[in-house]
Structure formats: structure tokens, C-alpha cells
Length: 108
Image 1 (spheres, rainbow, N blue to C red):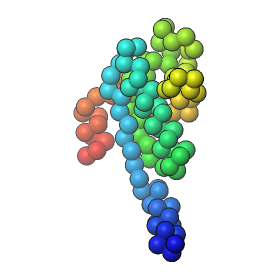
Image 2 (image 1 turned 90 degrees about the vertical axis):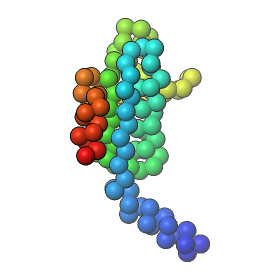
Image 3 (image 1 turned 45 degrees about the vertical axis):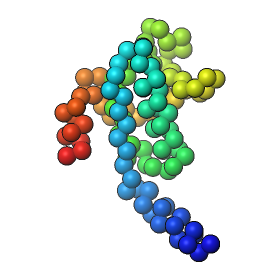
């Protein structure tokens, strides 16, 4: 029990040091799942795992939420009967900025 408490305390202290880079490198309606997965993972990391929003860098073209084929403009749904995962997702790099050289710059 004492080790478990210590592990939880250590994890709580390290939360601010964890970073994530989420990249959906594809575009177009046919690749909907890539951007929806990134948005879903963003919420899992920030809400369920307590990683600060500023430590989660999202890169996605961002052409799905307002795509003319989207029946509910401004939303991205990740699962059948799921909720909108686009709302609240902070996108740091979008459009043409989603490029290999920007990923390398960020990691370098």
C-alpha cells in the first residue's frame, strides 16, 4: 500500500512534464478517422490522464469539421452515438503547417 501511494504521488508530480504530439497527417473526408482519432486522444490525455493542455501539441489539416459532407457542421464524432470530440481540441498546427519539417523542428 505504501508503494502504491508513493507511485501515485510521483506520477502526480510528473504530470506537468509529460508531452504528447498528436499528428493527423492526412486530409479529406475519406480520412475522417485520422482527425477524429487525434481529437479523441487529445481529450483522453487532457481529461482522463491529467496532462496539461499546453503539453499536448495537435497537428491536423482541420478540413473535416466544416467539410461540406459533414452533416453536423463544426463537429467531429469519433464513435457511433458518440459526442463531439472537435470541441475544445486545441490545434497548434493546421493546414499546410502539418508538414514533416515542422514536426522535426518541434522535436529538435
